Image 1 (cartoon, rainbow over the protein chains, first blue to last red):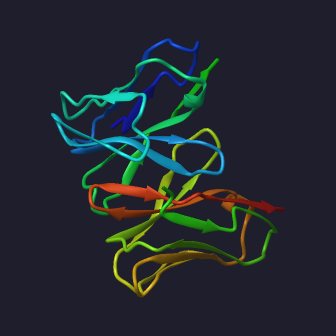
Image 2: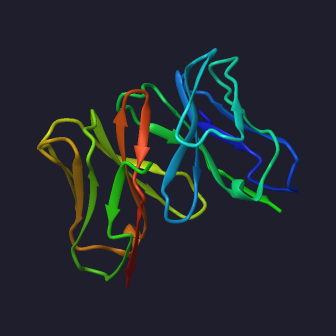
Length: 113
Length: 109
């Protein structure tokens, strides 16, 4: 099993550009989520999904969109990149949001100029 | 809103010393997890505690969940350089996980 995969690993964008961060898991997990990690702030939840076709907002959803058309994939879209979105983004999956172990991808380091 | 506060934020100790990291909240969680993260990688789960007052041991690491399920601690005995990393606590509530601010530990040989 590959676990949770993320692409790309690094990305540089200009302000106003859009892009999609890809996330896939092969563990048949229903729960998937996106976090951003900034120095001194731990991990903050952007969006999450409890199953295909179901998504919801986390703590910091503004400027990001998600969709979940399949169990395996959970892409994160930046609509119009801003310097405040410079961060490291992690995708995670879990069998259950109620205390189940979260498996994290390797992260995408995004810089917005 | 940061629901979980960790202390200390940074910790630098000599090999062989003991240390404790704290994770505190005013909210009640159904379970609490501890993760360790190494540079350039995603967090990896160390332990999940579910019951108030629960104590779990993982080799030299001891985890405790507060009686009221609002706080937790991680104690490392005889720290080794391989323990170096970022330690994160995470509380499960509803359909979300809430992460703490993190404790960056450096163990000097």
